[in-house]
Image (cartoon, rainbow, N blue to C red):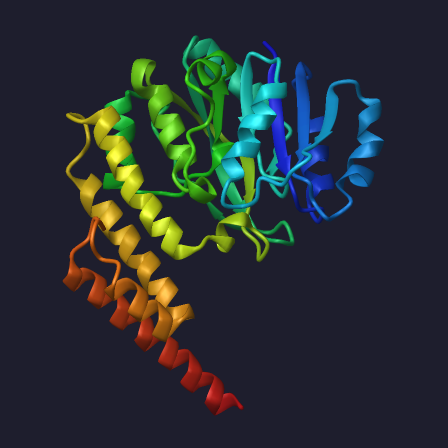
Length: 309
């Protein structure tokens, strides 16, 4: 069994650690695809010492995909893969040494699935553990996966998932949403639609949450609109098996995005959202409530800063 591990790269700071974590794998039948998204940082100098290993390949995009279109680079990485299964990790994440070995064990119990899941630990910029992903049943049907996803929502990241390369290619690669928002979940859900998903019980992946994490750069106005499109996508592909918690989850998510946007830009944010409620999943009163929360939060921060000054 051959694994293709991909690192769509833009940031230099933790890239060496990410690559090193792949070379430390106890299971040795893998290839590593690093695609530099036309970064202004010198990623090649970091990668070059590793290229003596013929399993490691470096490519540089001629044009930057950018954070909004980050999924394009995921799929560019996929285009270079030759392995049976594909794992896409961030340039600041890490695999534990037993990651691929644990996937092999899971495959022996549940062969021929389109998607497998690894339990994840969240680390900070110093590599300290700050949280761990909840445990999940070793096997779930697609309906069970969807229920857990919204009835008891937990943390989820792209690097959690291992996909069949054949399935990804047949289905057009990773599903595209701005900033990759929900792209990991939707791709995994669709992959599980036929045969379900198997979940590893050991922590084998480390997601880094730091000030330079991509998800922190999201434009909340684009992200909220993307949530609307995500809802439409789910209704199209999973109508009839969506749990009752589905709608409330996205209402809450959009409300939080509006709150964050208004907290950052109280006046322009408030004016923007009151004039852009049409077509949103949430109602005008819900938008207004989120805006008021954002303004209150902004005033509180400004008052606190004024007192300290």
